[in-house]
Amino acid sequence: MTTAFPKNFLWGGAVAANQVEGAYLKDGKGLTTSDMQPKGLLSLELDARTPGDFNLKDIAIDFYHRYEEDIALFAEMGFSCLRTSIAWARIFPQGDEQQPNEAGLEFYDKVFECMHKHGIKPMITLSHYEMPMGLVHQGGWGNKETINCFERYAKTVFTRYKDKVKLWLTFNEINMALHEPFTGVGLKKGSSQSEIFQAIHHQLVASAKAVKLCHEIVPEGKIGNMLLGGLVYPLTCKPEDVHSAMAETRHSLFFGDVQARGAYPGYMLRYFKDNNITVNISEQDKIDLKHTVDYISFSYYMSGCVTADEEIAKAQANILNMVPNPHLKSSEWGWQIDPLGMRILLNSLWDRYQLPLFIVENGLGAIDKLDEHGQINDTYRINYINDHLVQVEEAIKDGVELWGYTSWGPIDLVSAGTAQMSKRYGFIYVDRDDQGNGTLERKRKQSFYWYQDIIKSNGSNL
Ligand code: BG6
Image (cartoon, rainbow, N blue to C red; front, side):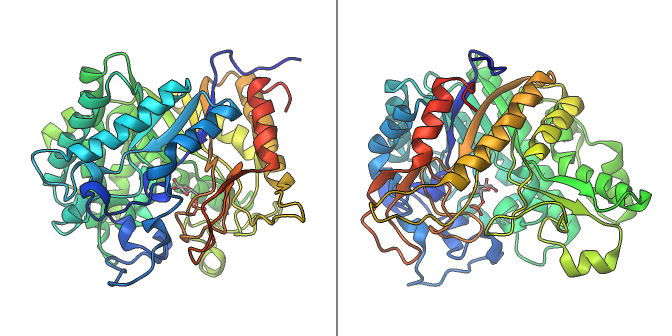
C-alpha cells in the first residue's frame, strides 16, 4: 500500500461556531451578524431578523452542550485536527468592551481541552462569517476603530489559549466580502464600491496585525489566511474570455496577495483607479500589512466559468460571477463538481505563493435519507470526497506542500448560505430538520467508516 500523503499529514474536519454551537445568547454572548440572518447569508439583509423570527442557528446542533460527544466521535474517526472558530461575541459581546467575558473564554478552554484529551489539534478561525452586531451598528469594518477591537480580541484569545492552540486562521473566506459585504465586513446592502473596499482594507490590516500578535504571543504557532478557492476557467478559448477569467481570479486572490506578499498588487491599484474607487491606505497601514501569513488555507467545493460576453453573464452568472461549465455535473444545490479542479487549484496556489497550503473545507452538501434500517448509505458523499482526495494526492506528487485536509461539516450542521439542516455534509447524521424538529441524536453514516479507513491508511485506501 503506497501513499503520497506525508506521515504527519493532518486529517480531520471543519465546522464554524455559528453553524454548530447554538446557545446563541448563553453565558453573556452578544448578537452577531449570523444571528441576524435566519435565512442564511445569501439573504444579504442587514437586521433581517425581527423579534419572534425562527433561526435554526439559535440551537444549531447544540454543540455548545454536546461537544464532548461530538469530539469523541471525531476521535473515533481518527481525526488529528479539528477546525472550528471562536464566536467573537462570546468573548466581547458587543465587540468594543475593554474586558473579555470570562464565561465565553471558559467555554473554549473546555472545548480545546477535550480535543487535546483525544489527541486532536485545534485549528482556530478568529472570525468565521460573524461579527458582533454592536460593531456593525458603529459602521462594521468601514469604521477603522473596528481594527482596534479585533486586535484586542485576537490578543485576548492568543494569550488565553497559547498553550492549547498552535494553528490559527484570521478571517474565513475573506474574499467573500466582495460578494456578501454584510457577512464579510458588516456593511449594508447597497454600500458603494469605495465603502466596501475601504472596509476590506481595514480587515486586511486587522488580519496582518493578528499575524504579528500571534507571532509574538504564540511563537511556535502558525497563522494562515483563509480564501474561498473560487476556481474559474474561461468559458471558451477566446482571448477575451481568458482575460476575463484572469481578471476574476485576480479579483478573488488579491486578498491572498496582500496577506501573503504584504502589499497591494499593481493590478488592484489600477482597478481602483479605473473604477474611481477611493481607498485610504495610510503609511502605517503599509507597514502593518508587511506581517504576512505562514500558510495559505482555502475552501474548495466547485469550479465555474467566466465569460466576457455580457449577455451570457447577465443571464447565467451566479453570486460568484461564474457561469455553468457544460462539461460538469452539479450537486442538488447547483454546485458544479470538479475533482480535477482541486489539483489545478492546489498547483496554482502553490505556484503563486510558494507557501504551505491547507485544505480547510471541501465536501458535498446533499439530502440524506434513512433506509428501512435507519441507516444512511451516503455513497454519493464518499464518491465526492474520494475523487477529490485522489486529486489531492496527485497534487502532492506534483510537489505541492500540503499540511492537511479538513472536510467541511464532518457532522451535519446548519448551512451558511441557505440556513438549512437538509443540506447535509456530515459523516455523522444529526436528527434535526429545517423546521427545528428532531431529537438532535447523532448517528454514524456509511461515510463515517469510510473516512475512518482513509485516515487510518493515511490515504492509501483511496
Ligand atoms: C463555506 C463556508 O463557504 O462554505 C462555510 O466557509 C459554509 O461556512 C460552506 O458552510 C458550505 O456552504 P453552505 O452554504 O452549503 O453551508
